[in-house]
Amino acid sequence: MQKKILHLNKIIFQQAEKFGQRAFIYHKNDDTNVWEPVSWNTFATEVRLIGKALISLGVKEGDRVGIFSQNMYQHLVVDFANFAIKAVSVPIYATSSPSQLNAIISNASIDVLFVGETEQLETLHAIKPVKKVVVFDDEADISEFNDAQTYTSLLKKSFDKAVDTEFENRLAKESEDDLMNILYTSGTTGQPKGVEIRQSNYTEFIRIHNERFSLIDKSDISLSFLPLSHVFERAWTYFCIYKGVTIYLCHFPSDVEECMKEVRPTAMCAVPRYWEKVYAAVQSKVDESNFISRQFYYWALAVGKKYNLNYKRHNKHANTSVSAYYKMFSRPLFNKIKREIGLDRGRFFACAGAKLSDEINEYMHSIGLNLCYGYGLTESTASVSCFLSENIHYVIGSAGRIMPDVKVRISQDGEILLKGKTLTKGYFNNPDATKRAFTEDGWFRTGDSGFIDMHNNLYVTDRIKDMFKTAGGKFIAPQQLENLMIEDNFVEQAVAIGNERKYVSMLIVPKFSELEQWAKEHNLKWKDNEELIALPEVYRLFKSIVDKRTGHLARYERIKRFSLLPSCFTMEQGHLTNTLKIKRKVINEMFKTVIDAMYN
Image 1: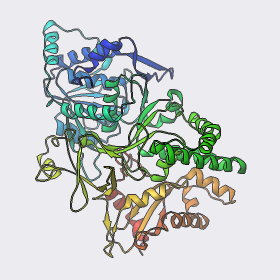
Image 2: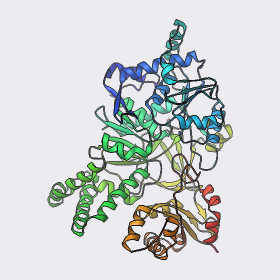
Image 3: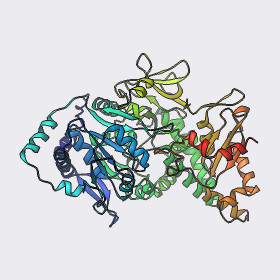
Image 4: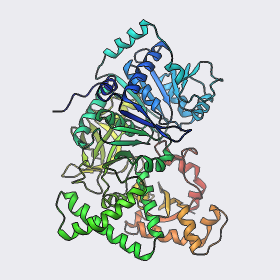
């Protein structure tokens, strides 16, 4: 019988009673570079103290409290302190621009804002729209803010009996309709919208994931490196709290490779971009090895594919020879590879947030990684579908089996529509956007196209808004083309172009570490990236890659022209959202000259 799923305002206190001094969260001390534990008891005590402090600051029930920070344990303390006093927690991406931050603070009417470090303070300083600021970093300079203090000073405040009583009164109140979070989507087409996530959404999320992910338990160790402002990491973290999992917080996403080797997590959620980098790193080492080593590796990989995809996936025993070869040669080799990148203890790795290429998906399963690929949205409180956690019966090419009690249907024009208890009721303070998001009979419009097979597996083919039509009237799914290209070891990023154009073209950012090595082997001369991509030999290399990767497609889908770019698309320059999705409109505007040249 499944245990009762507690309201998020009480779950920390209940788990503290159960686990006491056991380590709940580890965070890295920036000065000593040592992972430091925070026990369940300590965390619960801080939640109670910060909750009382917020009441003393004048935070009322239903008020929105912002958290503008990197992944820090204080971020989660404030989250659960807000829940305890019936305030609404509003996480904001630490990389947000001043205009994005201002829009969110204005839309949510935030008066109290928790800020991570100096970088976020500088962003806030450009707009200064809040009344009270609390900074997690004790070393940050807060002198230019009228009403600012540190998190540490807030913890040390003393309170009168009235505050204690008010805290307990609010804690005693709970409803499944309580608004817990407003999560702002990253906004590929404009200003972000605030998705309302209520207790009922999280209750259902935990219930159905407990059914689907039954193998996760208190013995697991999870590395948290995606921003806690992202629904995927946030919902996963709440699920880990429910299961009693120990969490390591990676302060900066850029440190994930180092953290992986130190922590060696047993479970984790990650976006496809992480697995693309893992795949590229392994392939690079293989390419650098000698001929005999490469041949052995590819033979072992073929055995791994047979063992894991032909047999284990279908819950069958492999034949004697395949089983013996896998156990004697393939598995030891793959364990060595996984150990070098911190994946050797992994039992379960959830993956979502964007399209994962079939090639990489298949590869990870072939080497024995339990990659649980799925699909979801902020509006659906993450997962709509995913592979089974037992690593069986998954279908490469699909986004997994639809989650229990999540209703999915496909509209006449191919759009994926959703209903269920994990679905948001709408966008905060934005009735027009809410109305547009739902059909007249109450189904949520995902904006994604796809289909469902006879085994209830969901296939997501593309973003409807991303799809474009060429001048010849042919519809093109750009993500399909882009994923084919980034599977190549020489390609870092790719963006397909062609809306109302006579053919499809592409902007390609090379993986310069690989390209430079190739250029040296071919005795080429260059000074910088601009000169390197201008070399005719480099153009011919990428022409062969484009032809190889897209040659099997219909003629109208193939890439007729391409341009190589000297640097990556970045969030800082406005090319990408905070979740690393391409802003297609921005790319088309910023690279208009380059794009137009491909059609002249």
